[in-house]
Image (cartoon, rainbow, N blue to C red; front, side, top):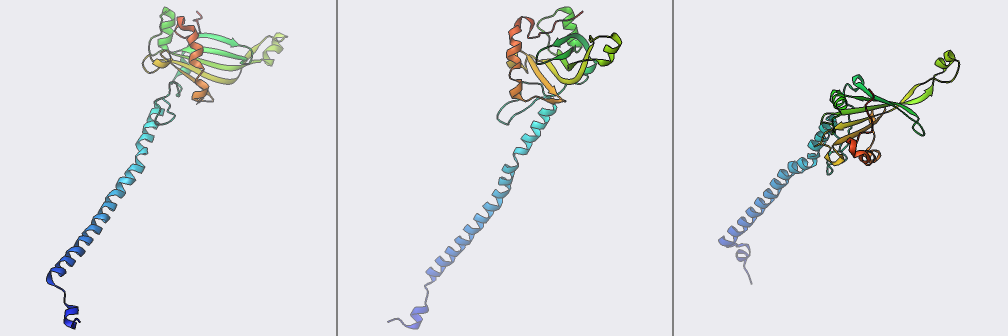
Length: 214
């Protein structure tokens, strides 16, 4: 049978071990809390990581290059209307019948005009060809003067199309970037998929249908 003194007695070695155990536990909890605090900014940084990518996409869009998602590369199509195109010189005109029913004016920048006049093929990098299309409508005002229905004029704008020559950037589509705009907005990639296969059929003229009208 134990005495009261025996019941309350704790050996010195046991007390040291108990204190050491408690100290270790406190240190462990402190480490866990420290790790949690350190990891929180890291997680926030990971969540914020798409922001630079978004900024990169915006920069690419501003440069005339479209992106569909971060895994895919830049689009092979022209998504920005070239500046000053309305002041370019005339290459030719066209009238499309059938479902298109449009007038077209084909313009070229200085590089394009020089290549056309010199008969240079393939077209050099920097060549840009624009095709402006309007609806094809009769002019009642003119026909009253002529006394018969013979005058037709451009109606509402339909679209603007571009071919931009950059043999490196658009190597996958014969060195040409194709653009199609309705009301100033570029057509999506799905719509544009038919451009290159169509122009590829005229390889002997470097994919360009329009001939120069002197």
